[in-house]
Every structure is written in C-alpha cells, then in structure tokens.
Image 1 (cartoon, rainbow, N blue to C red):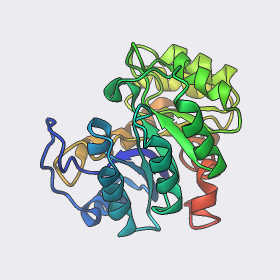
Image 2 (image 1 turned 45 degrees about the horizontal axis):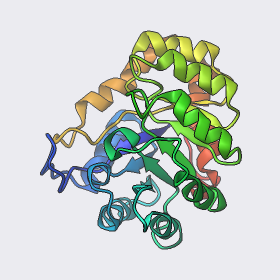
Image 3 (image 1 turned 180 degrees about the horizontal axis):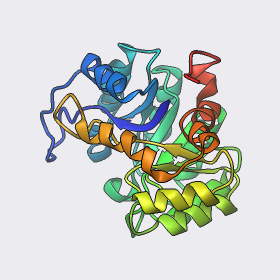
Length: 260
C-alpha cells in the first residue's frame, strides 16, 4: 500500500501545529500500524514558507528510511529562484516530485511562471501534486488547465476536490489524460462515486498524515480503515493503493516489495 499524501511535522511554521516533534522512526511506526508500505512525504513548513531549508528538512526526514518514504519538495513560482530550487530538489536532494499549494502560497495556476517549473519536473521524470478543493486558486479545473499545458507531466489533485469540488475533480480527471485524483480528505460518499466512475489507474489514496502532533497519527489510521466502507472491489482497491501509485513512482520505487 502506498500513501500518496503525508507530511513532515510542523517544526517551524507558525501554525496550529507548530512545534510538533515526532520523528521519522515514529512516523514509520504509524505507517506500520496502518499497513502502509511506502509514503509520499510533503513539507508542512514549506507550504507556509517555501524555502530551501524546508526542502532540506523533508529530504533529511525521508533519508532515515529511504525504502519507506519518498520526498516531494516545494517552491513559490513567484520567487526568482524557484526554477533553480526545483532543479536542486531533483538533482541534489533526490526528490520524486513537487508539491504546490496555490491557496496557501498565493498564486494562480494560470501564471506562466509555472511553465518552466513544470518543464523541470517533466524532464526529471517527476510528479506534480497540487492542493485542490479550496477556491479561488485551488480548484480542480484550474489545475487541469495546467496539466493540459504540460501533457507529459503527471499531475495529481492532492485532495480529490475535498467536500465542495469533488464532482469537478472527477470530471477533470476523466477529461484530462495526465491528471490523477488522490482521495485524501474526500468524503466517503464522494470516494465511492469516484471509484465507480474514474478511469482505471487514475485514483490514488492519501491519509494527510503528519498533521497531528501525536506520533500515532490516529486520524490517518482511521482514514485507512474507512476504505473498507467504500464498497471498492478488490481490483479497484489494488489499483488505488498499489498499482496506480507504483506506476507514477516506479522510477524511485523500482520493482521492489510492494505488497500484493
């Protein structure tokens, strides 16, 4: 099972979770308790303050368990150093993708400054994951428009539209070949419809783990258990938890030990 949406602790940012102190070892213990074999790990601090130091922190976190975790970096497209920083994420830090949060980072998905960033991610064979589901800057169709400008780049809707935009997220995923949908914070009734109607291999799953200061991440464990109530067929479940995420991350995961 691959969890496509988790976070490091909020070590530095002035948020409701500032000062959370769980470490990589405790995070892997949470993964084991939830049956998660591998996880995509995103910055928390970097979403509020996208700095090279935030990316260094994520890289250091996953480096303790490189066979279990993959890092995605972040950058603000309005910073002059954004393209160089995204290049550094792949070439120096060995990351597998990039996370953008247009709502928190305050930019539009239609800004042309995103194009050279997407070109770097594409050239590296990486994945772009975007926060979605919170207007005005993070709607699924806005993100789909960026995906269509870069058809060779896999783009993931990080929250499957959440409560308000999940229908839009599903429609965008159906209509955009390189757009994927991560069920993460999406309500159960929406998840059932998404699994029934989304194209094969286009649905991923994420817990959003790491947002609690409790090392056990109890809410994330509960989200994994929630899958049992979605009515997924065995094929749909395997596609969402194993095959689809593995296909996107195979360059970094390789043919290894994904549970069957």
